[in-house]
Length: 118
Image (cartoon, rainbow, N blue to C red; front, side):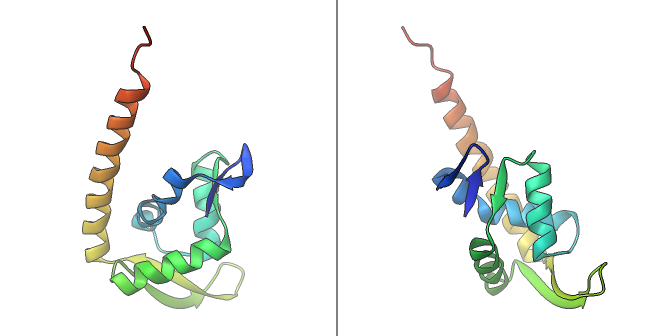
């Protein structure tokens, strides 16, 4: 579940619906293990977005089942074994599709929000 730093007790449903997109985008940059993915999301978003383990790992599992990512056990920088997730060719196509959908949606929402009140 993605949460805003300003209201940690309440999930943001719009952002929740974008978790696949965010995970695919982060993994397009480089293969990462789950903990590193959550840290990267938090860091890139300026500590505004974070994902709980209870939402992250089921989402990664779903992406793996869809064939959008693959997982491989490797050693972390701390010499621990962890599953590293990588984007597949199919995942890259899905990322392009979800990015286009997000851009359409965010443009439409921006158009409504910018309406002048008269």
